[in-house]
Amino acid sequence: MAGSTFFRRALTGLLLVAAAPAAAGPSLLFDFSTGKVLADKDAFMRWHPASLTKLMTAYVTFRAIDAGELQLDSPIKMTKHAAGEPPSKMGYKPGSVMTLDNALKMLIIKSANDVAMAIAENVGGSEQMFVDRMNAEARRLGMTDTHFVNPNGLHDPEQYVSARDLGLLAVAIRTEYPQYAPYFSIQGLSAGDKKLMNFNMLVGRFPGADGMKTGFICPSGFNLIGTATRDGRTLGVVVLGQTSAVGRTDMAAALLERGFEMGDVPAKTLATLPYYGLRGGPPVNMRAEVCGKKPAAAQSEAAGDHEAKTVKSRWLEKLPNPKLVAVGLGGAEGPVPLARRDAGEEYADVPIPTPRPADYVPVETKADARVKAAAGLN
Image (cartoon, rainbow, N blue to C red; front, side, top):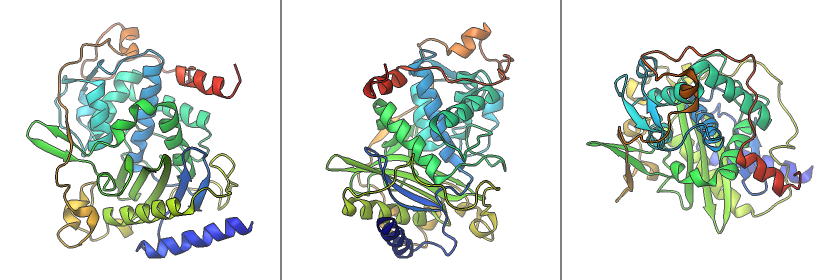
């Protein structure tokens, strides 16, 4: 109990040092290798995930690859429905085709809502069928305060997560599919003559930073899941509900720095952290505080560009020689995704009208088998 009190007090101090707003949202600091929770604040409070949703979209897709449903060079076709999603987006026309590999890069780094929807419709057969898979995987992972309605994080009052649940998802991605870790550490993309920098300001600026994802909508505020590795030790941080892009980065950096100073300590794990706070209830809505009277330029994932005009921060300094990864259309020579093959046709301008299962049950993948074998369950 004394140790728990110490870390709670330490976190309270960090919140003040990190220049957090008075109504700072939930936060969580944890160790990837042990699952230990090093610090937490309102870890079970329901919150709108915004584009952190795309981490589950990526995870479901990784599992589909693992199950043999498609490959990284498989075609992802942009439907009329997907192309109509609001920004942030790539803006590709309906009928455009890209590789899944490029789609995942644009999903994670550009946080493209149109690409997220296209992945969902191609992998799942329809948006709803893919969302069913998202929720099924959340249940399997023990994400008890999570519910998804769409694959890209656009606002829906019924779409919510908790900081603790996001920690479980981050660990699952990193431990089950380490081969995809490079996607999350990309500094920026080049798409034709466009340079699309990672919205995660830790990457390239915070020592050891190597992922993962940001998210923003007015009701959620500025969210961030960050990871960093030093001396073979990887820590993760979840920061929700900050009022600026710089603020969420300051908070994440302060928590990560403190975590590396702590070393290995006795602590609860993500799986055993006792539930606290009010159970259930609607997610917090930050719209008035975050967007209120702010200009449109401050109400987006690219708000850092606006902040750079008035705020001095190391997170806003341009990387001297950013490592950009080229993305674009074409080159999709792999097998058509299983959902499209089962339907016996390619996508037109609408999702394939395949039957919706009553309840999707996750199939066992190769990653699941490896986990069981490591635990001696086979």
